[in-house]
Length: 249
Ligand code: AMP
Image (tube, rainbow, N blue to C red; front, top):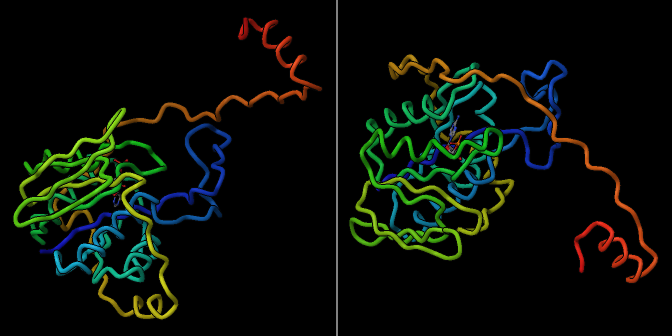
């Protein structure tokens, strides 16, 4: 069984995003970019399934600018077998991404597509669900455990106040939550090896997909600045202040 793992190049999670002065978006000039953290978890899960003998090939795919090749090389260095870049300098919204992934899935016929539950730049949490709908496949979102047996996969999901386990017939869509696994670091020899692994370069037009945006961003704003805290001398002063605020009886 092949596994398809979509990985997005996003602003690194350690970077504090700066809003552009004209409020049209986030300034990406000279900002460190990395693989979306939930996608690292997806790559790790796919590799573990391959190591268990459940999967035979792990294919990473990214839609983004030419530099998204670096993200794909990271996936290859972690252990993915090959990669596909669908190059677009324009930002592609989740529906466009899902339509492209549906075409790749039709071509590659994977047993599962394992995506992140959300990209930390747009926080959409839409792509996996849209892809499942476009393909007519079952979906197990927010996975904290994935177990394949025969032609089905049991996905344990993190839901409010507990865990839910669903069984899906393969092929299926899985989206990863934070507690699914801890992604490995790529070793130096594997980073070197990744340079010669196959990376196919495509364009959205090759798949006949219209990626015209459906949304218009009206305004992007910084969150309001938090006012500074104060130090209190002792518990009595703290309680007095809380009472004055009406938070303590
Ligand atoms: P989103 O719906 O934008 O929050 O993204 C959810 C997941 O879809 C991500 O964690 C990725 O696995 C996948 N995804 C979204 N955008 C892209 C992209 N441009 N290239 C590859 N994968 C993507």
